[in-house]
Length: 252
Image 1 (cartoon, rainbow, N blue to C red):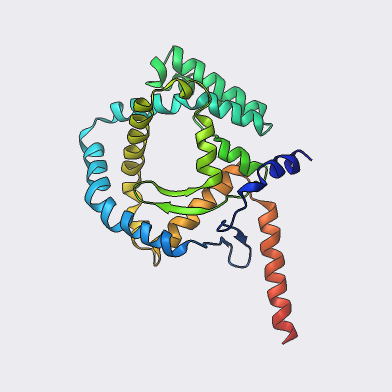
Image 2 (cartoon, helix red, strand yellow):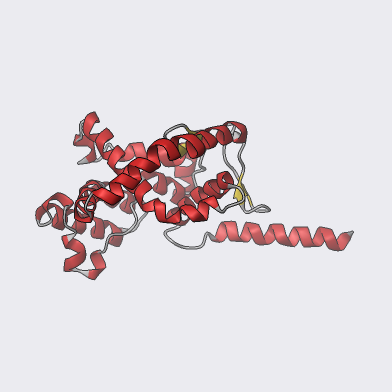
């Protein structure tokens, strides 16, 4: 009942152009594929090689690892209270406690997250996945809404990126000035791109980099929304589609 109520509240997100799951192809539809492909090509062939990648390489090669780790730690620590609330909204009280404990220990004893004291103090307090409000919506089967690729920004859906904006209503993210929020977003983006350097061959060797990234986006968010479990509903849809396809072959 709870899932039905929350899904109903956000039913307006199922707009024309929404990305809907197709069990036969084991992928999501892409009504805006023409625009998305054009934006992806701009980001992939122009923006990344001439701007983002050089910055990421310089960041990785010339900024000492302790400084990179410290900045990432502070940024991540700011999201722990939001992750705690979002874990509670999914009914995961234990994970809420983990996020709160991490925030308190790293804020007080880890100089605001420069050091991951929580992980050192207790193996059960290791850093986990960030829980966003978009993940909460996915947990309650709210559809993604329109899928779009934007210049400079990348992949986005109404559920995931709109949900992330909700996280900024929680302190301490709510207390950041817009300048600080932009700086944090920029540092997170540079660090993410620096980490992705070692996986470039995987993308570059793909026959279709656009579909590779799009499928990875949905699979990753589906995995997080299911709490790291196999989505039984989608698995059943796949099995039914395969069975129907085999029945059609037998009938011929």
